[in-house]
Amino acid sequence: MAHVGMFPSDSILALNPRVKIHANLHSTASKKNEKKHWKRNPERNCDSCVNLENNFDDIKHTTLSERGALREALRCLKCADAPCQKSCPTNLDIKSFITSISNKNYYGAAKAILSDNPLGLTCGMVCPTSDLCVGGCNLYASEEGPINIGGLQQFATEVRCSSNAMAKIADFSTLSQRSGVAIIQLNSKLKSNVKYILYV
Image (cartoon, rainbow, N blue to C red; front, side, top):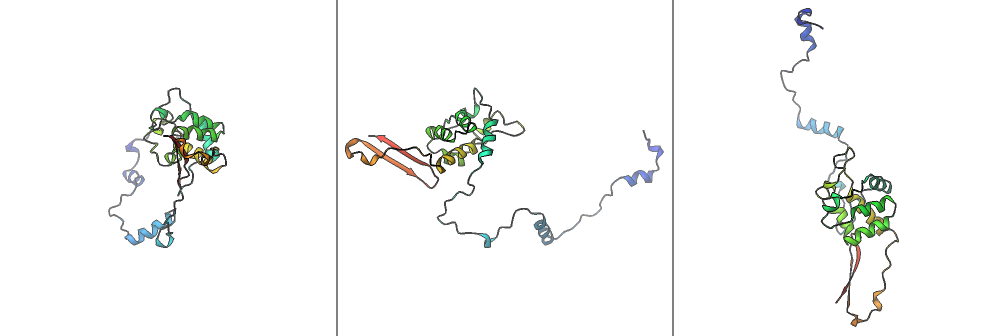
């Protein structure tokens, strides 16, 4: 063990870092140019803008690929008293649709989602899951984080809407005017395609 008396005072001070007396000054213009060198995403200016009038396409088409959805679904613990299910305001059967995805039964997953919530695709995109179901996930404190429930919901409903697995609905044009049935069809740009039959 070295004692202070063993080393001369100049050699001890030479080991310390040199303290700056004055601040370094850089102009704003030079810092902006330096920032461009380190910036990873491209610059956005008016030349890169495109006309988005009447363009309702999704900016981000899907959050998960099939492989990512399977990996995420297999992480689910399928809790007996699932807090994610209790915190969902639409009362989705989250365990059942995640189990269907892990078994590659995407139609069954979409059917479970759309039977509880006809606007399942839209809710998968815009629902604040971090405050609701994902916030209650038991894997929240784990290293990989909670299950991406909104992404799984969006994946299952998008796969169903993009495939030809749409449910066959009876042709209601043959019904007479006096049958007491009102048919409402919602077909929006958000791919939610739902038919409601109301018995009057």
